[in-house]
Image (tube, rainbow, N blue to C red):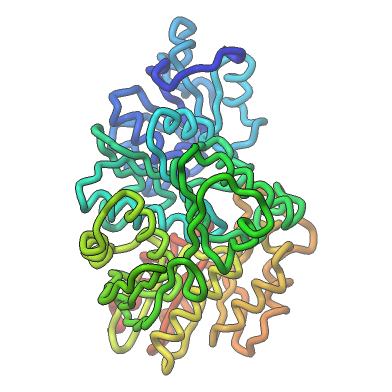
Length: 468
């Protein structure tokens, strides 16, 4: 199996190592919808894994070969089994070792996406941040206008209540292109969006130049006749400093081929115009708030134009776009309390999120509860994290969520806290956060981060409901 180049149709059984990940679960749902046998392992039982089990996927949570379903282990089925591996699960994992020792076909999630998209018109969205929102926006605009597509989104779309939007008559695949571990180099899109090239994942990329060179390599994998759509402010060097073979179009809130102007912000939507070289498109309403989301919508608008949709149809779809779970997601919105949750885990994302909130609620005290994600990211962007968190009025800081990493000596929440320029700041446990929220009388509360901080959403919401 190792020397054979398999096709995705060769397999009847799919076993996911790390099935509860947002990207992995979308793939699992796809193959289940294709009437394949789908099962897997994850370290932690979550609401998402519970949903997968309710969709008749067999999942276990112990690192134990004996718990792998018999039909997967059956040697007669081996050539029909694909093991899909998440980078979050180490190769020292007992089950991974078993599959490797017994010559099963093992592919990374990104490789499987590459296999799936190779025979389809593909729209791929890459970038340090913004890619989940842009991917879901594109999906909604196309889906709303009868362009059937299958989409793999790195979050739960609120319009479709899933990270998979499926069409068995799909004319296109929309996919979030992850830069981690150079995963997006498995994709050869017809249209590619690059929203930003801020340094991140410096455990994988040694320098900013290496990151930029890898994005340029991704851009040059666009198929002949395809299009690159890029953020002029954050990815401009990509086109100016590298030879990109595809035709390229830029977008921005500033100078670009496509620009947003006359922007008005509201707590539940934004209104603006779009100008390009040939027209001024007015009276656009985006169904979610935030300056950064207006910019994200520019990318979606251009993609939709590439798919031959009219301005009117695109505008109508953007007006009904509801966003993505954990991206500027309101849980409480009253005169007394505002509670918004956001997945922001990079300094620039946090800055954009907090500034948007401050713009909406300039006269309210803003308390942020932040959980840093990864020791390496905290170390590499310590000063930038401190600067973005200093935009808050109060910081409630949780310890670092390790994800796939082991602790790094000296890198902890206290180190970050000491750099934040706020008087009102403190390190809390989750239990202490709940107690502190219960003492509040009013204001804006934000939960920020990509770890398990989402476990706080329900209890915080329930407490605030009793205080309204």
